[in-house]
Amino acid sequence: MNEKKDSKNSNLKLFYTVLQKDVKSEIKQISDIFAIILFGIISVFIFSSAYNTINLGTAMPTSIFVTQIWLIIFFTLIFIMIKLFVQEKEKGTLDGLKASPVSKIILLTSKIVFCFILLSFIELILLIFSFFISIPSVNASNLIEFVNYIIFGIIIPTLDLSVCGTLVSALSMYAKNKSFVLPLLLFPIILPITSPIIALNIKLLEGEILSTVLLELLFVVAHTVLMFSILMLVSEELLSE
Amino acid sequence: MDKINKIILNCENISKQFGFFFALNKISFTVNESTILGIVGANGAGKTTLINILSGLSAPTTGKILIKGMNYKVNERNIKRFIGTITSKSFLYEELSIYENLKFFSKLYAIYDKVETSKTIEQAAANFNLSDWLYEPVSYLSTGMKQKVEIMRVLIHDPSILFLDEPFSGLDFNTINMLITMLINLKEKKNLTLVFTSHNIELIRRISDAILILKRGKISKIVPKDEIDEIKIESYY
Image 1 (tube, one colour):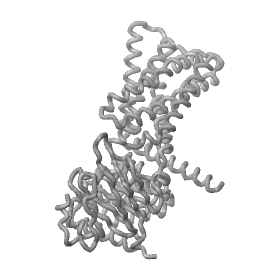
Image 2 (cartoon, helix red, strand yellow; image 1 turned 180 degrees about the vertical axis):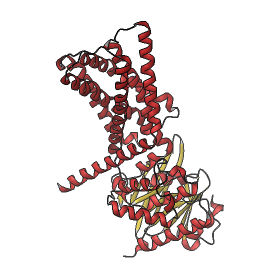
Image 3 (cartoon, chains in turn red, purple; image 1 turned 135 degrees about the vertical axis):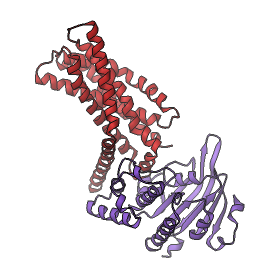
Image 4 (cartoon, helix red, strand yellow; image 1 turned 30 degrees about the vertical axis):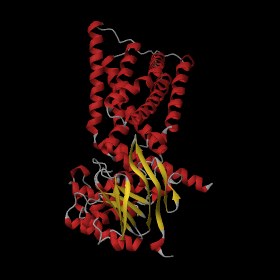
């Protein structure tokens, strides 16, 4: 019993150690994150400018706002995916992790959480900017609706994207033409959840109650569980040459 | 117990196949505890592949590896706790400082005592004349300095067996001598076992207790200690 608890504690410590190293490394290369954020902000600005040129003075409909934001987030994910395994593989540091007594499952889960943190941070900045630049017509006005939107419209889909991103990053790190393989593999994996995520966001921003988005939510959660299970099942093969 | 006869590493029929090409073909050898095995061979002989397999970075296509009597396939995590590896690629994070890198690697080997780790790192940095660089990013260091940090990293968790691929490349004469003295001390005092590759035949002759000569993925000859000075190693390439 105690042995099991010790092993659990030591796994948690290892998980935290790898995650902490990734975050620290990223902070030291903060210009990379700024570049991704800049890409996002410029995209929002171009989108909003194009909309405002045609529809002078009218607030951006929720459907267009949500589509614009998630389109940018999907592209942002590709940049983050490069940071997960591809860069570590190219630099040789992944071998340092593989040669250490850290289980492959710990490595993969720490990368999922790292991807989630990075994506959430970028999303937060993008959302704040886009709310000011695009000025969408949002009907969700009370705190509960807003919290629902954050949890079910942002956090859960971001978690799903983080799992998909980690899986694709690990799958493509051995490929010769990584920049080609990454989006090519990501596209079919995230295609089934694109529509549910956008529908979920539109409905929540329009102030609809949770029961009306249950189907979309269930689909996104099921997709997350499925992708996570695949990732764990193939963890040994993914990180072995 | 006579430590000289205690086998720490046992490789049985190790093969590694890439497509139709055999990088290693049915390699079998043993290494005793507290000994130094030098691996030599021409380019493409399979030295790096062998080190990668022994350190768990790559799995053999067939064959069995026992380290301290434990099978690699079954006890991979346990075995990795007491081995150290240096390959041709650096394991160090360029953006982190020497101190942060070494602290990270010590935590990977479950060394969490902050005070003790700091002391060990500072002492190691002093031994390698890197105290002034301890808090600088690794990217600021020269190739030789990075190699020194690699050696500090590999010793941080007090391993029982080291697998080193060309560990002395890029180092100056004095540093190589310092390292050799240190490794031989560790071998004598802490029963450290060393398996390393090098193209420097003289160096291999000087420190090895046995030499394994690889030729096109097969063992061409295993030279015991008493024959090391007499044999012309290059003739077996």
